[in-house]
Image (tube, rainbow, N blue to C red; front, side, top):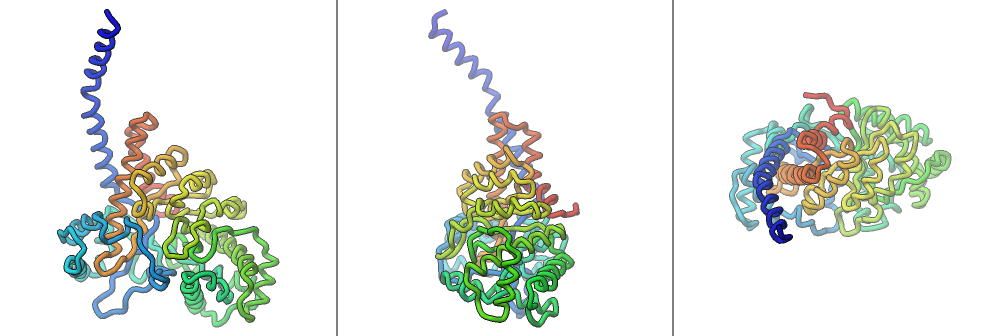
Length: 445
């Protein structure tokens, strides 16, 4: 038999053997897609809004640092109301069919949404979770205001506890920070009122015991399963060595005497960050840290590099605390991978599933899951975008995107022989549900 005939025979044999391959692969893909799409998920990170009856004051507790007070900035395409993904959400949630974002269309969406809210009343937030196949949403809020367990679990904001002194010099760094630091000062005053404290203690030791520890215990008793730091909006994440003696001196010197120099304030913050996160760990509350490219024209992206956190994550006195790199450290997902090797470090894909190219999210998931499958969680970062772009719409889009991206990552791993179909299902459930149950010490419903 000539070489040409042999080659032709081999090609024909391969073609015959693969006749059933494509249908089988298609069936596997369809099966896994359906499985992932219908999983009831734990949303590791979101900003849901509470139900507000007509004529009642607006919900203002949805974030410690609402960004509507900083100078205007453009939104990425993934969050733009003109993105076609939101037309799909409007059809699914509100029954509104539109292909544009004209004023008339926006009004139609807003009106349909208000009818749904009025019709569901206090049950609207849970209704919204059901539409996104979310079993439990971890709500990053100042206070829960009617969002109750078991569907919503509280994540309290605690940057304010790290900033007890006059922060005017810290805020002077940029127009963004000038608007944000006063919000933290206001929140600290709220925490002091909740604790019945009229003025700051004169010593750092007293502040740590009567304010920091007491505030964390109060949050834990009120149902908080985690605390959240948005520090990257305020300063770089380079929390340096813990110099408790220097911190105590700085606190005593400036507690009643104006703003400390920035270098001194950093020393105090670096110490208090460790105190706060250590106490959170003692209470079995995880610590979420905002780590990603941020929003605002003056956001310092270099200051939110995941690798900056390594000295803190290597602190042996903090190994009892679960740290969650929120938003996956996007776009520095390789740095996040390196940090996941530490026993108490985890990550989620919140906001990544809204901002990033789907293929890029799938690649990050595949990279993380090949090494640390027990460290990766689903999240939406759902937030209110206005009267015609509710938080539930953002949750729906993020949930849909995340499931597609996770399915794509798992199918690639199956195709390349890295995992079996059965293992793909296990990993899907870990990412969408089981890992968060363990990290946040949640109990099965």
